[in-house]
Length: 139
Image 1 (tube, rainbow, N blue to C red):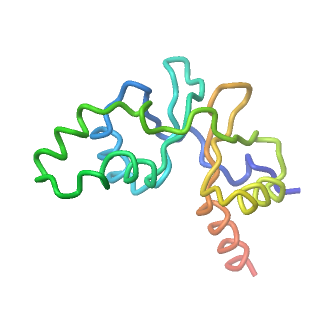
Image 2 (cartoon, rainbow, N blue to C red):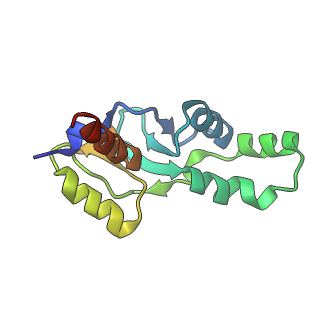
């Protein structure tokens, strides 16, 4: 039986509640990711920010501002202002099928993976696609 731990990305990059949206934007752009877990100093999950949250919460409303002003605005907004607090999560021991169904039913692009409240990974649509590709390649 395929489990979440078999597909998830372990120890994903994260941001903190007080990090600026400029930092978040730069990190997401550099890593080419669309989802970023938010943790506290102990590694406990506090929330989740998606690229859509970033665009909706900060970039879209001020699209007419000059780039320098947008950057300044992003520096002044903290991650906690746009994140989804208490997001749906998965555990490493859940079946991949159950998590895939949860993601499909709710149109989630990812789920943070936790043990208790500690973030241990993230499972994304890309993880499932990668698995399918690997299965096809192995035949």
